[in-house]
Length: 283
Image 1 (cartoon, rainbow, N blue to C red):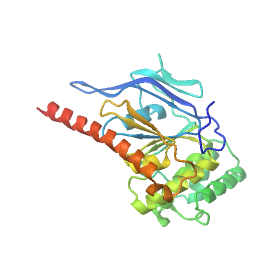
Image 2: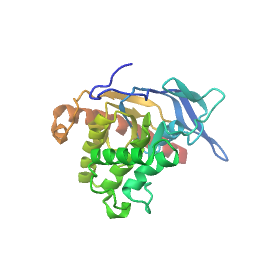
Image 3: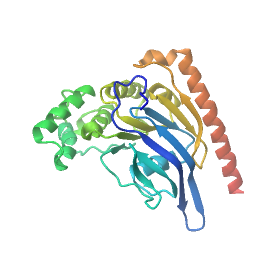
């Protein structure tokens, strides 16, 4: 097993997407969203997925999560086949936890109750264990003192951190993040980035992170995968060799800016291709 630089000791979370195809069937035609896409995401890796809007990034994440079926190919996690062959849809499970763009905290429960709810309902932890673990994760997220607040009583950035902490309560093998910071302002996002990396150092879960923000992708990722215009498939992979831990000082480094520019050039080319294709389809 290859160790990911900057991560203490990876646990489980070796995610392999092999030759995956996803075709949606509409009334009049079929739409290919993912085209023979292959990714090998190592245990403990933060793999950032970027690409033009509508290219199929979320379709790829949803297939891993088990929210919809695939057309062909396979997805395996730690050697276990999630889908492929005769089984075209993965079963959702606690080994893969999704954090969406829109918040999902229960507004009628306190932050502490939000974190403990899942493990208690599933019987994975007793009340004392759940409370202890929740408090540790909230402290790691910089949320000590917010345990008894309701979601509406804390900032949007704090709610995002609470959602990440809640996602880690069941020790998932893979954390699937679908543009979780999209609605936040730039300053809040910067704080969230450093908080996520700090939590990842302590909880080295594999992360598959979809974003449109190329600076976010380069700052957070061990690897940035630029996807083609629809249908989605890897166009360019950047191995980010900027050492961890990363702080805001990275943002002004020459190497960081070079990575961002390379990713921007690739995404721009794919966005142009998508625009031209759309123009042709409209004629």
